[in-house]
Image (tube, rainbow, N blue to C red; front, side, top):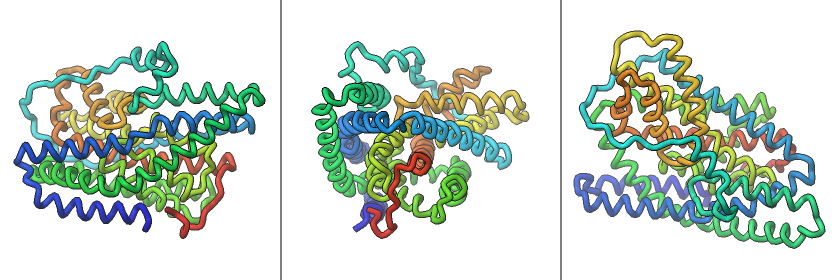
Length: 409
């Protein structure tokens, strides 16, 4: 049975289970939240060791084949263009379509997440390289460490042959283990869907954010069924672009329901390799980079939500300078979310409110109740972007073996 079909069955069971969960019972919700937390930890458990050995081996091969520069150029070019394009899409959409103003509440300001560019950069190079493997959320230090190791191996192939063989072997071993984990996650998706349904139902019942959710849903459908297929058709000359979108189903489900881009990464890696036929040397590099930097969906959501906050506080027209500032900051902050695989867009919105000032520091509180759903849309679009972007890189670098759709997992 296809993975996406297993997950859809799990979703159906989760939705039915939500009808029998007493959402007003704190003890029951506490247990459900604990189970979901354990499921997400289980899903991310092997991602760091898999990435370390896979990236090291991939960098070794790419450097030997003189493809590392071309791969990096196409990957980061795709990340920048997708992030800017999605941010612009969100900005234009919210300016054209008026969403009703959100009611102003008088909730007290909670602790604003502490974001520091200095800490973000210094954590890239801890005092010991092995410390880079200790953080399961911030994957960039692991990527850099593995990249250095893999590239170093290519400078002396004779001396590094045992190490390269070890990296290759352990990469395959952890891939098999991760494949098993993604199958077992079918049962975990029941609990994730149940909690998501309960959370969504309670927020939906208030009718405060329904128009916002509808707009995000329409944009998601536009991206998935129109924009990305057209990009694949014209950039890759792909005659069947929807087969690439078909390979996105399972990763999208995981990313959307969990709101966690790292949680969806293992599924993305599997589908990239086994469904789309992307070679390991490209697959192991592009997907992690998109999970770290390619947060265009987050940039889109940030732009939409911040303009909605401004309109809720004031009926005055938003100036062009403010629109340009919102677009620029949304775009820039999307790259700073590399250490926040879950909840990143809402954190960015709180930072934008703080940066904007003018008594809007508490504006993020208007969206606090809806933040998990908002982050789900952002993570879902980011997951789609990772698959489409990785496929584009593989086609342009000629590191893809096209698979028949019947062989898709």
